Each structure stands twice: as C-alpha cells, then as structure tokens.
Image (tube, rainbow over all chains, first blue to last red; front, side, top):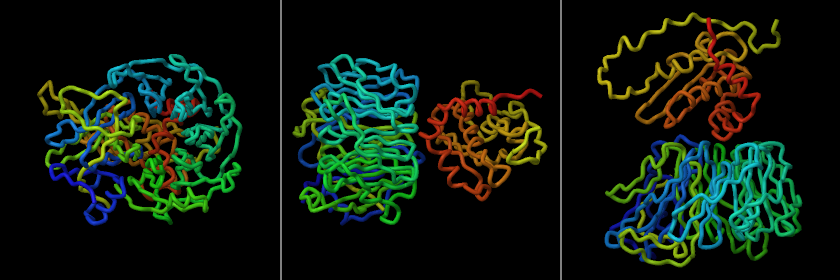
Length: 410
Length: 159
C-alpha cells in the first residue's frame, strides 16, 4: 500500500500516471474525467501529478511560452499543512521571437538552460536558480531552431532547425563551438535525441524520415547508421528509450513508431506502429516521454488526450526479443526521473489543484506553453524546510513522491 | 489574359454597407477597454484579397460576419471560411492569410482557430489540420515565397 495524506488531495486535470502503486489506486477509484476546459492547443500537454508520501522533495520546473521562459519551484512550502505549491522563481524575458524548446544540461550542479531561439544559454550561479545569460550561439542556423538536446555527458549540444540542418556544439565552458553540421534532411528538422550512452543521435523531419547517426570521435564525426522511412507525414519528435537502444518517433500521421535493431548490428526496422487500432491517437502526436525505468511512456496529441503506454521491460532487458507496447490508459506529458509529469497547455495554464484550496496557476503564461522540462536532480529525497525564503541548492534537488491523489480519467 | 485559374468565373457579391460602429457606441467610460466583438474581427479580415481574383474574401462570400465566432473573455476566435469551389487548392493559402492577419491584428492572448466550412471542400480535414498546426504555420511563414503571396493578399487595395 502507500501512505495517504488526508490533508492533501490533489485533483489534476489532464493525464496522470506514475508509480505502479498509484496506478493501482486509480484502478479502484474509477471516477470521471475532469475535462480540461480550454484545451485548444496541440502543444505538449504535460501533467503535474503528485502523490504525497511521507517524504517530499522538490524540483525546478522550467516553462516556455512563445516569448518568455520562466522557472518555477515546485515543492512543499509548508510542512505543517503539507501543501504543495508551484512558485515562480524567475522569468527570463527579452526574446523577440517565439521560444520553442528548452533543455537542462544533465551534468553538474549548474543547470544550464538552453533556449532554442538564437540558442541562448543561461547558467545559474551559486544560489539556486538565479539564471543569467551565458552566451548566445548565432551564425549557424539560418532559420528557427526548433529543439535542442544535451548529450548525456553534458559536453555536446545538438540543435535542430527549420533550416534543415542539425548542428552539434561543443561545450568548452563559457564558450561553445559548432563542431559539426548534419545536412541530410530535405526540409525542417523537428527534433533531435541522444541515446542513453551518447553513442547514437536521432533526428526527424517534415520530410517524413528519421535518421540515426553514429557518434564518433568524441562527437566530431557523425556517420549515418540508418534512414528510417515509414511515417507517411511530418515527424514531430524522436526519443530514445532511457535504457535501451530502441528509438521512438511520433508524427502528424497520428502514429507512434518503434524502431529496433534485433541483432544490435545497427539494422533498424520498424517493429511496432501504435495507431488507432491499438487505442492510439486520432490526430497529430506531438511528444513522447518515458519514465525512468523505461517501462512506461506518455504521449500527447492534437486529439487532446494523453496516453500512457507500457511494456514488459524485463523481457526487453533479458534479450528475449521485442516486447510490444500496449495502451494502458488515456487521459484528457514529461516524466521526471522520479515519476512526475508536469503540465502546461495551450490554454496557458499550469494545473495543480489542491483540494478545496484550488491552488491552480491559471494563466501562468499569456501565450501557448511550448515546453516543460524538469531539471535533473540528485535522486535522493529530502524534506523541505518551512517556507522562510530558504531555497535548496540545486545539488540537493530530488523529486517529489507524493500523496494522495484523487484522479479522474476516461 | 490569366489562364489556368481554379475558378475562372467566381461569383462576386455585393457587400453590405459598413456601419459606423462609433455612432452606436453607448459606452461613455473612457477608461474601459471595449471587448473585441464579431464585427471587429470581421473588419480585420473582410478585405483580404483572394489569391487569384481581384476581389476581397467578403465580396466572394468566402468570409461573412457570421463566419466569425468570438469569445473575448476566453480570448478565443474561430473563423470558418467557405472556399468558392470544392477542390480549391487555394484553400490553405486563404486560411493562412486569415490567420496571419488576425495574428497581426489581435492581442497576443488570442487563440485563433481557422477552419473550412464543413462540407465545402473535398479535403476539408487535411486543410483544417494544416491550418491549425502551429509548427507548420510557423515554418510556412519562414518561406519567403509564401510570405510574399500572403502579404500580397493582405495588402490594401485602393479603389
């Protein structure tokens, strides 16, 4: 069982799912879906979901809207009341163009925040999350930079652009140098993803293809390992599985495709397509995100739903062959390492309801929220001090595990 | 003469006289902000030129006042346009022009929904999907040829 805090019932709109224990709780409840009143946007829907347990910890959440970026601190602000709160810490304005994507550098105690437009990098100093401008990477991309991703080592940054190219930048401390450019796509590149080992890079494009590149020479060289054709429309995102070299892609063609190389010889094939016939989406699928264990993923779509999928990860790890993904549930997201999905939506709200307190942050931004990312944190948990203005150092961040939750779903 | 047009002979309608909104305004509070209403939104888009013919979308009845639905409290607007012919390949251009004009004219808090009037186009779902894909619209507007076409439709014509 799990600890239930009577003082805290969290009602969340949108998709929710997390730990196995929570899923069991959901099964026994079966209440009706709180419909998200203003779902207009096809953008990433992420959902903040909390289940309080005895230990609460916190995370820094970064939200992007069309022209601004804000960082929020999420955690328990008052120990006695066990009230969970999302507090805006920081707003970085001044972008004159739409901001599409952010990425936290995965390494070190300094979370680097990267903004896609003009590739602006921010670094935090010693105090938690006082981000200041580090550098702007210009003169490489000639059109919008759509997404960016740090390599697992934190030493390389890949940027995907509407100009059809993917640039790789080397992190030299205060400076960044473009060390490679991948130019094979025929038109806009939408997404880029590194595998867990940093040995493969995947990109996707409106040209309907997904490319896999082998990373050589410490990131200086990229060899085409596979060109994957299968999607019938614009591919919106690619995402490597967190523990295995299995690649996932999602598209304007309403499907999610799984690409796997059976003999580990680099010969990738499409081993599964998740479409409406397996309870998949009925419109453009925008994003995919995995939990840390890699046995569950959440996908979100223009059909205004979030879907949770699961697989037999033990079977995959044991080398017995490919284990299919099956639909688990649908709700009207981004897994943090400790199982939180955070929500931002096209109606500009971050939703988090706490019982009768109704502590929802409506209208967190004035425009579409394009991306939500949890910063990386140390996996240890700690108890939050009372709200006295104290903020934890980034090195002490952990993720909330949470308390009782009252959930609604289809 | 121009040949190869989708619709060689469009029907041109007489447009109703524009009313002077201010004459009817009963709002005397100088500090209040008027809510954006249907007519105001329609005024932004009625004069958009058809990409193929020297007429406005209002004159061709591609857009009417009733094709605009506005909810100012929720900052939402929906425009339903009717292409002149069922297989009009200019439908996406027209939709894009309407979206761009509204993006430039309305406050940034507005969510804009553009769609083809149900039953009036052969590939209605495909056109709607493209017009409402924010990323596709953004990428299209970085295409100089397309931008030139849109700007041409949006430029005022002086009679």
